[in-house]
Length: 262
Image 1 (cartoon, rainbow, N blue to C red):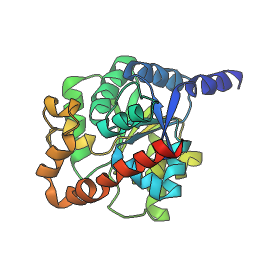
Image 2: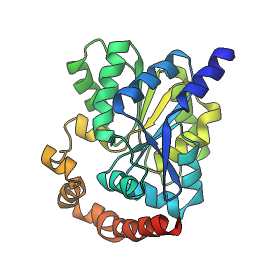
Image 3: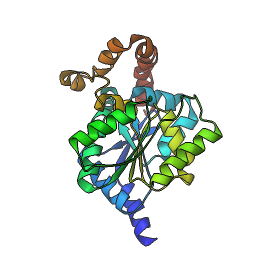
């Protein structure tokens, strides 16, 4: 019990930055993995959310989503606009950590530390393809389960039980969840009390990219904050609302947060 208490205190020590009411973690990728190792070895249930602009806006508009993010142990800055906003607010986030970068780093981390993985979500076949890619790179990596729930806006009780049971029976160290945000984050929050202690990461669409089923923007676009444009060009029907209607709301809201402090 005492060890668990000190681990919990240690994991909450990193700085958090208020972006439209969501407390975003300010932490480096190396420190993040070090924290994960401590948590997994201590058998703690840890929730990790990854928040680009659209997730921050979803939280701003929906208290349930914001409560889920603020209840998470780590809320990572995925998106240059979020990082730029933190600097504009005079509370700069030290590093942007995207789901697309975190996933391969977590896989390497799990293989090196002998931690087991469970893949939850994505479209049918994606998890199996990702497993093949992971085992090609890390033949000794332990993937103890894959579960793909059917598409539902909200999982019914029967399906939710299947998901929880699949994870609990496998007893993984790390659960990677691809259900899209904020759905994946709400699912973790709502099921914490029933889930096996592990590291739960809402990783979004990174499964498809690491599996080689979708392309990522060229590196020069990452630092320039133009990955959104690449995705918009790739999937205009699916992404136009997110990037052309919802995202522009972020700027006036950040301006209001900045100047309301004064």
